[in-house]
Amino acid sequence: MRAWLLILILLTSMPAHAANLAIAVRGVDGKPIANAVVSVHLIDRPTPAPSTGHGFAVQQKDLQFSPFVLVVPVNSDVSFPNLDKVRHHVYSFSPAKKFELKLYAREQERLVHFDKPGIVPLGCNIHDQMSGFIVVADTAWAVRTDASGNAVLSGVPAGQVSLSVWHPWLRTPGNSMTKQVAVGANGGSDGFTVSLRPPPRAVGSTGY
Image (tube, one colour):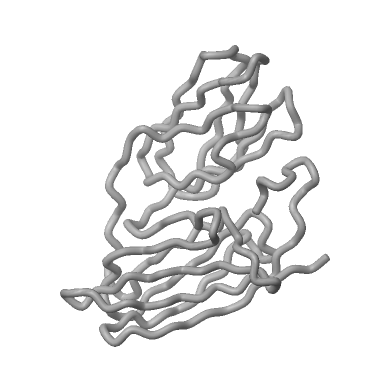
């Protein structure tokens, strides 16, 4: 069944000609869409690189990856702790980061360095139902929508920006949509709709 996303962008004025971009991602039925990643790149101006973070983790718990979608700045380390009673074999074939964490047991963990921006799908060689995604961002403004389908990008400079929305089940090339938005001091709103395909059955309710 075809579903639709409505992305509503609210521009709230801030000092120094910047704005908060409040993003609301909703289905056609009004229900929130979680795990959509919203990012901004400046147009005709250099986009600030994100600050390198720390403490990022993707747990293996209850035979699932948690969180289902994780956003990290480029050049971040991500740990993969196993909290299950069974062993896992985590891998990705992504061009942004190919890696393989061979079988490791409960209360063990592995560390992976993500040095290229892009989408990194995750899988487990032992448990086919497990899937997840790491979004490695090259911009200071990248955030995942919460369970209420909301996200805020703070301090975006005034002017033309390119706003992208990615979700694993978007029915678009690369699972993303991009829109040019004018960020100004007077506030305002904008939006667009995109098609959303059903998630694989194995993902269940964690998909969105």
